[in-house]
Image (tube, rainbow, N blue to C red; front, top):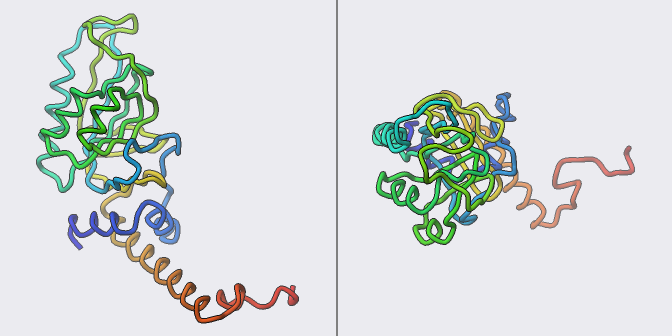
Length: 225
């Protein structure tokens, strides 16, 4: 199974079944804090992770545009790039209408930021799937803020929603949550998730055929306990 096929399988299964598949496969859970939420709940995002880290520094830094450019260059090399950003800027919102236009221009599949966003109407109009922690009008429009200078890096390991994420990881994000998976684990996760899905569909068919709640699950009557 190639990367595009794995991503399509993740998109079809959704975050819940992928999470179940990881559990059945005996893998460590990589589900983000549920406080990260989708701006467009009906837009499921599946793809390959490219990363950014944004933080404050005591000394002047190159413009953030260079960090974006590094991430965008990496995005051109992977299938269905999803930008995953760890923001240590608090309620300073690095992603608004201008940044979103850059993301559309770069051809990103979606954006996940453990941090703040703003310009919600602009982002919604651009239909860029985005997952975020906070909405805040605050941003950075001057070189030097009280907290320091904004800078960072791209294509490095980041922590998002309590999960350590590496460039090249696969991700599925939807209204149920965000799940990351190492590409070498993806085939086993997909097989396990598809088995769970098939088991559920078979159970529903047994119920529709008239079997009782416990009987359909192969369980003895409650009186046996």
